[in-house]
Length: 439
Ligand code: ADP
Ligand code: MG
Image 1 (cartoon, helix red, strand yellow):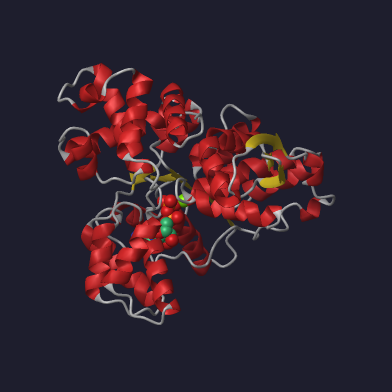
Image 2: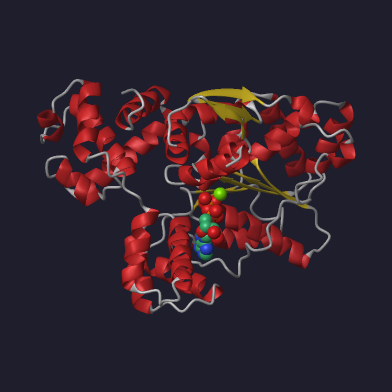
């Protein structure tokens, strides 16, 4: 395997732990420069990516261990800029599709249900009368629930009706990278401005990755204002409500709040089933209603995961020239949610107890004092992440708690992890210990 292939395999492995978005945004743009003698040197395109890779070191270590069969020490460096700046400013955006829009995401292939009907309604209105009704339009949700799809659908739909409308789809990360590259010379800086400020609709994805208090956020603010004042449509997607985005300045948050904010909820069973029917038909795959229902029952939450499991089922069935049966489905679902056989739930509980200096009895007791509630939530979180235990199983493991209590706790800790850096570090280090990093 050459470096490139090794890195690709590592990325594939990381999909077990991290969202595709995070991987594509931060890991996909990095490269493995050197590996050998237990060391791996990784080049990152920018500081943001570097910090993200650092923050996910334990997952990275685990992935390398699996791919290469040994442990590595990592060094992270920022790629020297000289190599990435094209000589001719005209070629600056040459490799990206000019407007970033992916044809395959449309309103036609977006299933509407209770969980997303408001967001879709607003998106359609925005596509019909860009700039007029809901500006900006801010949509947020957890991962894999269709934000990116919806942004592209808006862009494609405008494009369909007004073929020469200028539309740009870009992730906040891409906006930032292009901006940073552009300020190397006056010429490129000017062409960056022209590019983003001359559009009729600007679609910015994953805005939570806008770097804090930097020139690029300033640039985004100015771009936003200019477009907004000119009555151009702005659509923004994020993994959380504007008020909860930590790194974004207050004045930008209040701009976001000036338009329409909607969220997308997790799909209910009926909608999951409908999505599966739709995707199976798109792939011209004959999958029985029972198998689809069973899949819809097995995978809740992310539509991306649902779609991934169906893909895999169909692919495996085709490869084996067999029908996609319930049995095959069970095998597939098991592998899409791998369980680490070497780590038992009691390893996880043990590590959490050690870290918080409490006993397993205390952790599993009915007590609800602060000293045990947080460790319990951390344990639930790690049991969920590492052992892929269901809320029912976690409830059992933690002394017979109700699954709704566990779900509530999981929600709470995840929210907290998103904002509390100290807690995040604590949990990362416990996780590292469990995965054998510090042993
Ligand atoms: P997000 O940006 O919220 O993480 P994506 O837009 O990337 O999610 O969606 C993940 C996958 O699920 C994509 O392949 C998308 O096409 C699909 N998807 C999401 N919601 C729907 C829906 N309502 N109907 C059909 N496909 C959907
Ligand atoms: Mg997305």
